[in-house]
Image (cartoon, rainbow, N blue to C red; front, top):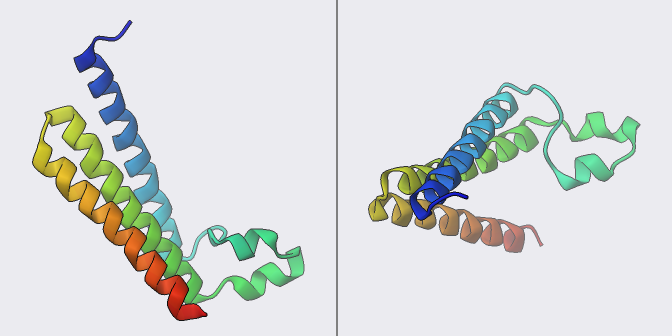
Length: 109
């Protein structure tokens, strides 16, 4: 059984791992490698998927993963180092991304 500090360390390491994986995905998106992480891409039939692989779609997916990876890394490091400042910054980044996503969705309609 993990102690309270052990659970915090495990959560911090898990969030840091998610953040590193997110950075790898973001870099692959910026380099136009792999599939575009977009719901429309996965819902489209195979012949239509190539039309959805645009520079704008890759850049948008890369930006999304970069911000989410940054938030995960900041929150993970805040667990590891027991730092409230890092947790606050991570939460601000995550909430800022959510707000930007809502603004983007509203502006598209």
